Image: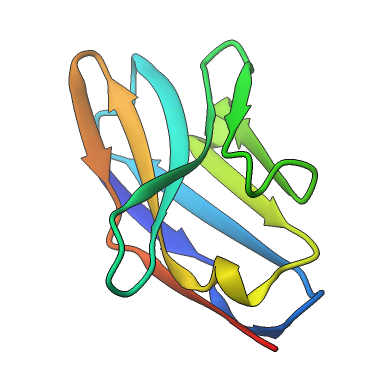
Amino acid sequence: VQLVESGGGLVQAGGSLRLSCVASGTTFSINAMGWYRQAPGKLRELVATITSGGSTNYADSVKGRFTISRDNAKNTVYLQMNNLEPEDTAVYYCRIDRSIVSYWGQGTQVTVSS
């Protein structure tokens, strides 16, 4: 399984970005899909996840501002990020779980200026 993320960039505080992650290869039996982020000098942390049934989970720091969604027909997961804050600056990684294996994307940089 290969994951390709897109949509990162530089945005001012209060702005919006939409991240996309497309899975290719052996994509049957994909279960949860999610987004994680890692800021400089910090550990990678969960941002949001979505199950195959559509149940979502968010980090407290992004609740009400970020929305995760998925298109199973396109093997794609999205992260709509609104009202961005400088603290959201990080490399954002896509992750999918297929059977008992997790796959990670290469990451996309999100930078929020104050």
